[in-house]
Length: 204
Figure (cartoon, rainbow, N blue to C red):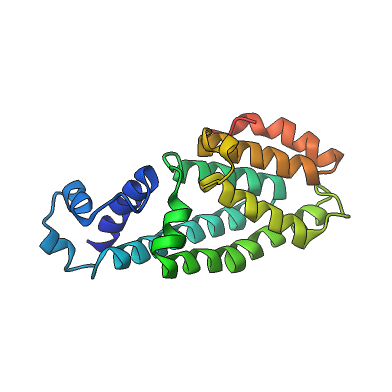
């Protein structure tokens, strides 16, 4: 039951932000009583923490699957892009702000995941791309990875007003385009141009 509760809560949090969602809203969405809801979570903060934890576990499983099945560095990033857009179709503004201000433990959990797991994955992808001669060998791996991670967070919740009117899909699509065109070799650009048309969610 807990995974189901977290999935419904995640949908509400992404669409409306965390602060505005009450335990009544979650129980109503699930068609269960608050008493039943409190059998699985202690309070809203606990619900947020468990929802974020489950969300990160799912991301890790999907990313590992992508990296283990696809040996081409560019295709890995395009597949990750499809995955991210699929998972964040309805993400609204204020999500990260709400986490940081009202649910600090969950925010720390999210940022630690970004700094450890996500950093490692992107670093490995860049090294693979350089080895395959799809990425430029002079790329500064750490800085490029840091820029990528910072931009991903801005896709989810940006304080820059000009970005707030755009959907996650639009922002992340532009991010992938920006990232890959900046680091790809001539061969990499050719591969990108040939294969981006096959993507379901991304429209580069």
